[in-house]
Length: 415
Image (cartoon, rainbow, N blue to C red; front, side):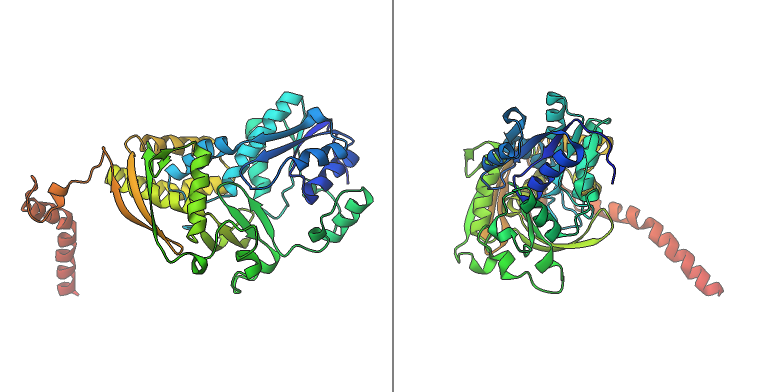
């Protein structure tokens, strides 16, 4: 195995076992200075221990970065994605995918700040995250060297990693001595559980996954029998207040998570098509995002023109696929974002949602820019609409069908 030289590497570092092993491996294999970057994206874990672990591994204190990115994450990544009502393959709210371009962006910023010539991540060679990280790196710093240990080292599975950790005095948590029953990735938008006990798509998600101690939401069966109505306020497509209370972007999503978790909302058993070519089964928990998706869709229903809404619906799968595949920093995503954002100028108002046992139901919506006209749709008054006008509209739309029908009738006579 041969590696090209790297002098200083910025590592996306959680402080967990895998990235701790990667840190030592980088120091040994590349004989380089390592800078650690730990992102707080609202994953719900204490991140300061990562500092002590990095120092113990020989990282200089000035080379340790632990950044709170929760507000930037929700404001500049999650909210723009939800303006598009984004769903990958009709179900997945892209909770993991949307976090990667932000982590990569901050890694590159740190690399420029400290004069690093390389960046590194802990994504495996089987998954999508390697693509998402690296495409973002190259888009933001085209000459950067990327080190992907899982594609380079010679460890043969978990036993080899554990042996390496013991050899180098890397702390191994008791629950890491054995193979974990599944893998978890979390941020403020969602939690994803994948692998091992979830690999058979014909077996229901085991209780060890859906009812674990650190789960993001309860199951609908466990949710209270009492429904709750919540009011979401939007301005230009973005959530700005809940039940009349304005908050920062990350605080709004935190509150939606609390409400969704309480009512068993946002659990999803999904088989998806990975970018690298294989199908993958996972259990995803996105309680706040699920509520936000329904709320945004409801406010658009009265504020967006039919043509704009239908065009957005046509563009959304393309937009979702770009994010899933890691193409956040591309011209085509920026072009689509500009079109989506242009549609949101009048998407302002309030939506009332009823939350009950895993379900979200719209029970009211209002906007100062509403396109909904009771006069036009009412049964009791014409409201300026002449019903007789519909006859010409129908005949014009049916004209080509009538012409074809006449032709086919003639053809039938001649055969």
